[in-house]
Image 1 (cartoon, rainbow, N blue to C red):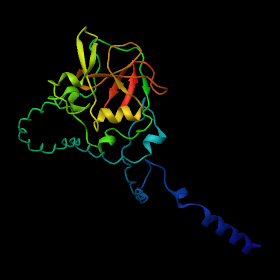
Image 2 (tube, rainbow, N blue to C red):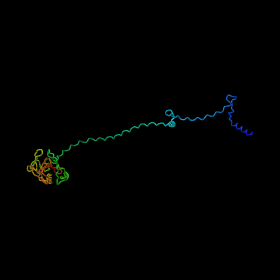
Image 3 (cartoon, rainbow, N blue to C red):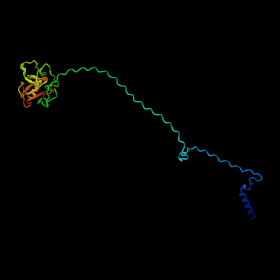
Image 4 (cartoon, one colour):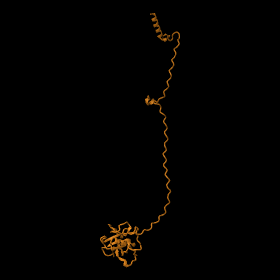
Length: 243
């Protein structure tokens, strides 16, 4: 029993801290102070954060790292220079002065002066229906000024004998026109043959009156192809047209 009590007392003595036996402050003998504990290591200072708007803490702004420095704006691009125009071509020298056109011979088609037929009816040539001047092998016929009708009715000069005169006719301007006899192998003779017309002296009524080139005129008897009346002549196709 004594051994057990002794062991229990030893345990209690060991478990009591030594400070319990220290003398109170201000008392008798001085005792050494307990050793000071080392100070904890200082924590690294966190980087300064931007204050939240309004003076509070903003989680989104205060916890983000500082944004990288903005790059400077690139210099403004200069506009492309306008495309250079090609050099204009060298000016050509002025062309030589044009020669005046030679005077054209008078038109072979004749129309009575101051006469405008309201309706024109073409009497088709029953024999020749080819192209213009085809009857003359494609060569345009021009009147000769020294002959009556330009030579269309034959090579009769203006100063023909009275034997060749085939009457007279009064034109639209009250001018008397002399009619001459058509010569064989002339363009006029070929036209009369194509229409089966027979020339006669002008003057009596109810005749076929044909105006030709150069204010010339002839007369013929009517038939079943060409009735009595006044007609104009197209020498290029030997075609009659009624007024």
